[in-house]
Image (cartoon, rainbow, N blue to C red; front, side):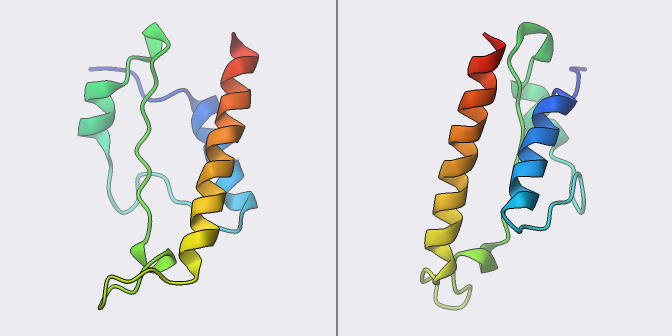
Length: 92
């Protein structure tokens, strides 16, 4: 069995998303253990993290059309990627 993702990495992502105004829950209601365990190898500096998004944030679930929230979510996820990029560069 592999180790869980680095708690620092998980915390950085959680803090960023909370700072953007999102509600964040870890392993609730589901645990993404299978995918994360299969891909992540923290001992080899390869981390895996599964993020599940509530579709209501970005689409009308009846029509599958984008809502106004799509643009905001897109921008926030781009910001998260940039934030993680800075964090990882700081480790190198």
